[in-house]
Length: 566
Image (cartoon, rainbow, N blue to C red; front, top):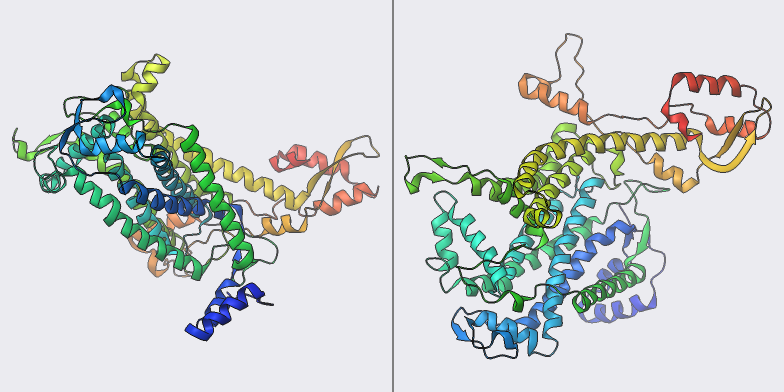
């Protein structure tokens, strides 16, 4: 792909010449500041995560100036009267000091928390946009893997940060973390020892989480975000199908001034939303929960939303365990903890990481793709994505089964039993519904191409029938619809001797062939239908049509649901 440059604005050429005369980088700046990027509203979803990450770094730097990552017990002597004289850790006391005694401290602390939620949410929605449009395909597989790793690390970063205030709510989450870690076979006790510095809760976990939260994980995140942005810069966004857009060109606006102005405004908008949430919406009021003690737990404890699905998995899992050596503790595998802790996360993250390569194996498609798919045009991929969202959503919802039971006055056991059924039934049902919806939307596109769009003009035919005149779709709309491509599939036809292709032999090859046939191919061809609806309606409009009775009678007898566009 190449960018078409016409003229260089003075605001670009001036600094470029200045740097070129001193550093020899003028040509680089001129080329990159006028780099063309495709434009679509969905590209802003990833920018939400990027700008939230910037806010996280800025607010986190502010908080480190006052936070004390120590578990040494002290008597609280701050300005929050209900806790005066209460013994607590220095970490909790410093969190209270930031909230009540540091000017602007509560605002910054709440901005940090809201930015963390928006960071993870932005990455999730961005990942869904990339998945549903097929933007992970060649040559962007590496960037997709970086994105999956970023999302995984963001969850760990959120977990470590959530535990730092050492209040009762975060301590409950820390206790679950310890239970999950120690349940891991062979390595569980070692991991717990390294995290807590001995028996739980120990005296080192806050300082160790603090090092992970402000140094190690952010450093890796910053490196991965930089690599992600560099690859995106080199490869550019995929562009949506439309007029004049192909796999060999880029239709859009230059980085300077269009993209830069848009990005700057959107950063300020994101910052304003985070500041507004922090100002008007209270989050994590640690002074209400009190300091953490291992013997206490508060009712209705809920983690941040991104950990809710793991909480739900723990709550609906039956109390299963395996004793390998009789009743020996060393031989016990607590499946009631291992499965919820590892399987849901493993299914989602491993599935995301492997999907580009599995899809290429199924379809045999090794081409470069710079045009994004409309989700409806790849119904199986879209249905898989909706099924995964439903799987996540059921677990997330069941993470609050106690709140659901209390507020809706239903049995807690019934919510648990219902969750155990829904976790299998709901994703399958979501798959079927999403698949049928995709086919229905493809039929709608087909009707627009073959019959045109409704004009709102009602005409009466000579024999008395009333019809609505359809007009050809706008040029850009038609180009958008005709950007659809059939999902590739493997050549599975046997040769004259009845021998299948080389890669299709054996049990695995036959399975691959069946999967390719089901996944790929054209489900609803655009030209399948009347094919010349525009001409017919134009003729009717001018009083030249004579076959209206026969045509409509045939449609009514045939039962073609595409005729509903009339």
